Amino acid sequence: MTRESLTSRFLRTLRRSSDDDRTKSPSAAEIGLATEAFRQILSAAKALLVYYNLDRAAGDQFHLNLGHGLSQRYAEEERTDAEYQVMAQALRFHCSAAAAHQFYEAARLLNKPLPYTMPTAATFKDNGVAPLVPTIDFYGLARDQAHLGSLERESGPFTGAAGDLWNAGMDGLPESASIVVRSREQLWALLAGDQPRKVLRLTGG
Image 1 (cartoon, rainbow, N blue to C red):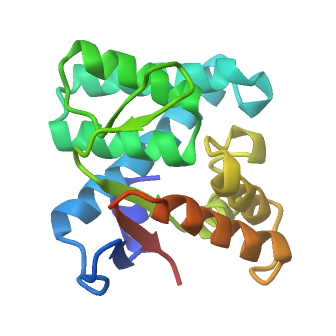
Image 2 (image 1 turned 90 degrees about the horizontal axis):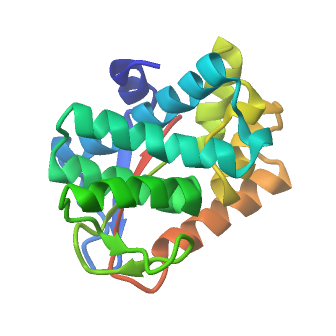
């Protein structure tokens, strides 16, 4: 999926944060960073399926390769600090600790200022850098991908509530299905958390 089509699919945006400024629209730069992060994640997942026949059935091998592949891309393309930070957040909150750790370790070697440290391969410690957390309508995204035939259910790179929404969209469940409603609530609770984060949500519809 191209950057342009992903942006147009999720045209309406809303940024919410833990402070009182809950209605301010995100900047064009923030929208661009979030859109690009998800475009790259989907592209990397597609590459793992096409070139290595890897999907979620491969477990940690899939997620480790996802994080490693993205870290290689970002290093080769000399991505900005902001791009590294938003990708790190997307991997942390929507993919897996294994993918995030691979990306984190590569970024650390390049002295990139990420929004957290990882004391272990599965734990995160916020450090107050770049609190922007991108999210997206995973259910609507999966329905689009299923319609286009771009990705299959098990090649979805998302886990947790995001993964459940992806599965529901791929399976063609109605938006009113309990798993969709419940997973959206769980995802928002995760993103809100206890930290002062700005959550940029790209929404469809």
